[in-house]
Image 1 (tube, rainbow, N blue to C red):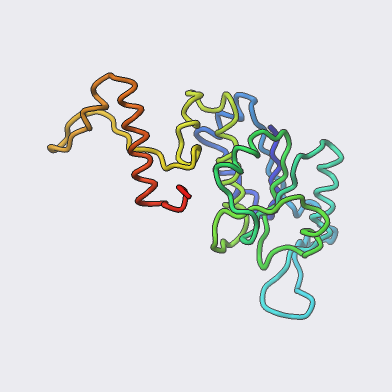
Image 2 (cartoon, rainbow, N blue to C red; image 1 turned 30 degrees about the horizontal axis):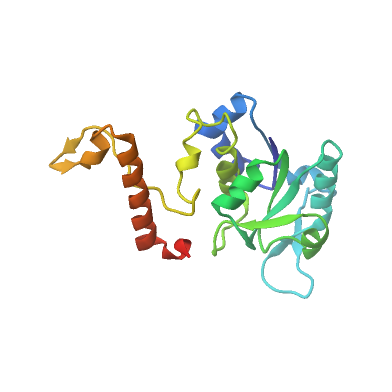
Length: 224
């Protein structure tokens, strides 16, 4: 998979990809993450990427020309399955969407900033809008990193244990069950006996029951 992230703040985006699972995925050659400084595509000497909104109002708006120049340059090098704008009013990111995107080959993630982007970007240049929740961030950079992390970890070969992602919360519309590790007893707090039994079928049944109960208590809407 190849992911291009367009931003005016490249250093803010680069950090999450320089460690742990995302770093190893790139080192293995499974995924390529390219962070692009939008200012390289600005046309004036000050490399300006934002301007005042027509009609007045508070806040600046990201200009269409640098974004169009950048996307056109990227599209001249490869075909993209989706050009995604990170937006608080976009499609809500969930596990099903992450699974869908993990099957793609090439993605662009466009990070908004200030009061957002010129509406013509949304109308003519992007194919999809994604939100990570009903709140507003200072920009789309952190949201883009969240989307990339959720997607990349699902690609075969990224996780050392191929079954790990399949047991994550929300993969089957349930919250994951509780997990424990050594010691089996700590300060009188004990690990459930069934997990120490070595009986695989009973352990699977217990985990499923726990997932159902946790979902019922914490996210009952998922059971609907």
